[in-house]
Amino acid sequence: MRKIRVEEATELTVRGVEGFFEKSVTKFGSGAKIDCPKQYLGRAVYVVIRRPGAEESITPSRRSRPRHLEKSGEGSIS
Image 1 (cartoon, helix red, strand yellow):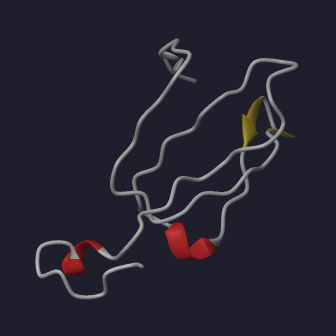
Image 2: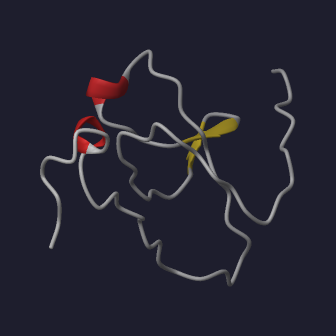
């Protein structure tokens, strides 16, 4: 089995995210796996590995308005 190189970092910024979920890695034969909904088959994903004892929750950042309304001025938030 080939070995996957892990890039070490303390922070990650990703754009174009459709969503995210948190799962635990489970044993699978001589390796390990992460269960994922079938709707994401064939999609590119990032796996982020937390250090033991790291913060237990993730706070998603949300855009204040949809991207297609940014330049037109429509849908402004008051």
